[in-house]
Length: 188
Image (cartoon, rainbow, N blue to C red):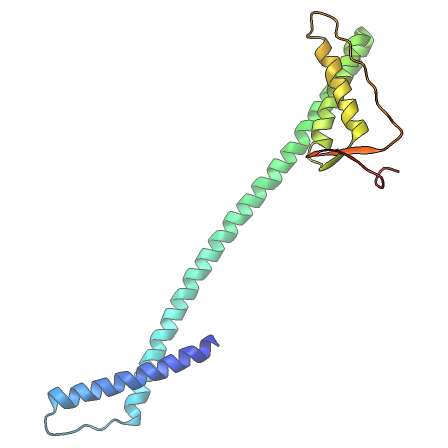
C-alpha cells in the first residue's frame, strides 16, 4: 500500500513539476516560441525524484536502525541488571538463612531458649521471602506467622503478655490481599 501511494505521488509530482517548468519557460524565457512537453522530460524528472526518494529512504532506514540498535542495547542492559538483581535477591536470603541456621546450632548447644527464638525469627523471615509475594496464603501459614511474631514481641514486654488462640480447624481457609476467604477446593 505504501509503495503504491509513493508511486502515485511521484507520478503526480513529476507531472505537475514538468508542466510548471515548461509553463514558466514558455512564459518568461522563450517569448513567441513554444517548447513542447516531451517524454524525455518526464523520465528525467521522475529519475531525479526516484534518486531523491531512495536517498531519503536509506537515510531514514539508517536512522531507524541506529535507534533500534540503541534501544536493544538499553534493553540488554536492563535485562542484565534485572538478572543481577534477581540473583542478589536469591543469594541474600539464602545467605541470611544459612547464617541463622549456623547461629541456631551454636545457640542450641549454649542456650536452647535462644535457639527457639532464632527459629521463630527464621520462620518470620522465611514467611516474608516465600509467602509474601503470593496472592493467596493458607490461613494456617498466616496464623503460624502471627504466633511467631507474638512470641518474639513478648520479649519486649515488661509485663507478661497472655494470648489466647481460639481457632476452628474444621474448615480450610485462606487469606489474600483483600482479607480472609473460605476456600472449599484448594486445600482439601
